[in-house]
Image (cartoon, rainbow, N blue to C red; front, side):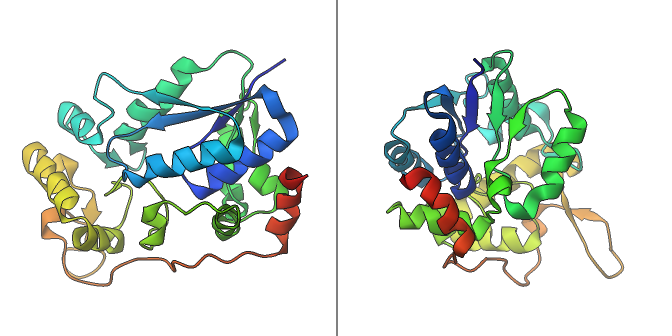
Length: 252
């Protein structure tokens, strides 16, 4: 019988997706997490709390080649991010998990109701890869998942509580200008570390673009990030009937 592999990312969506998968498939489930050094330390607290909620251990994988460190990936590959994605995600998470998987594994993905397009794209690109998307099946959005975690008595990861959209690395290179203005305020040491990497690598690592004016579309380094609006989301999650219905699946 195929294993049901839950990819737990230390985020609210993947936590609820895992909980729903466990309710349906029980002992067939294996819970997997890829440790990344650059995530906020509170993610490890969240993982331990969720492990107790799941009632099942989480297998934590850790890259050794780069020390599970995005900064080391950037330095050694002299690359940060492009429209094709970030090298750190590929090397520290995706390839690590792919090497661990077994033929026939069914992957549980934490796509929320707002991300149907991402699920459709995944299935189109990987038609032979069996996946489950329990959050979309249940009609659960990102805010629903946050509220469900809190109602289970688990504090959300600190990055959420600070107003960030996810619990990714501090200074995720997929973020935009508003996001990095917030990182510059809240985590100046991590922001400066990214700036130093760009100083070392040069213009090929610049991923910010001017959005208007005479320099529109030209890239610039983080160190030259102009003042402007800071992007943070609301810190109080909401929950509707749809998540209460899903909660009943694992409360039984």
